[in-house]
Image 1 (cartoon, helix red, strand yellow):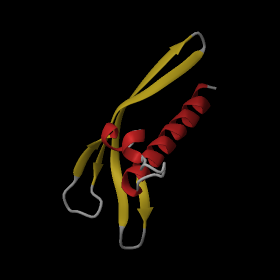
Image 2 (cartoon, one colour):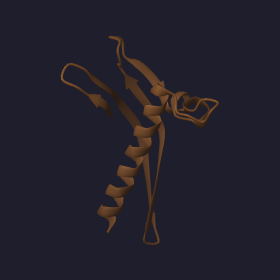
Image 3 (tube, rainbow, N blue to C red):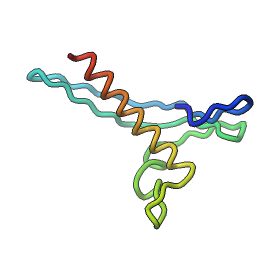
Image 4 (tube, helix red, strand yellow):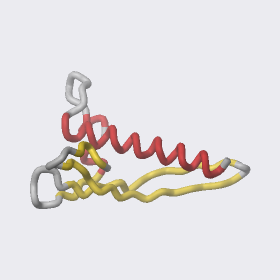
Length: 94
């Protein structure tokens, strides 16, 4: 997932997840779980982070209900990824 891309700097993470698909009675459902990230950020040392550490309500929002800068971007991009997968699966099934 790319958070920002500039000429000399790119902020991104590798995202890993399990995608479970279930098809029955003409319907398809899916779930994403075991989501984790390998984030390089501003450091040279990659950091492994699990979704539970970053994108839950308790971790991503401050007391005012605003997204934290770093964990918030992981939450937003992960939700965007899930929405994109839903769209692609819906198109593929139809």
